[in-house]
Length: 31
Image (cartoon, rainbow, N blue to C red):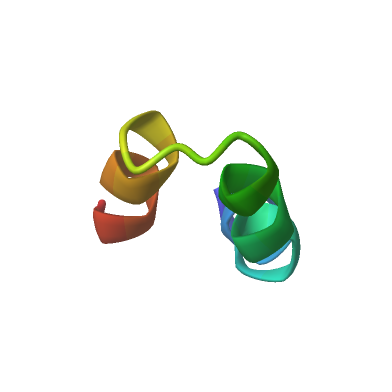
């Protein structure tokens, strides 16, 4: 889970920005 969160922290911005998604990524980030 630490690895997942680490990847999320680093790539989350670019990831959900590229997808223009405020859905799954945002939910995962909030979780």
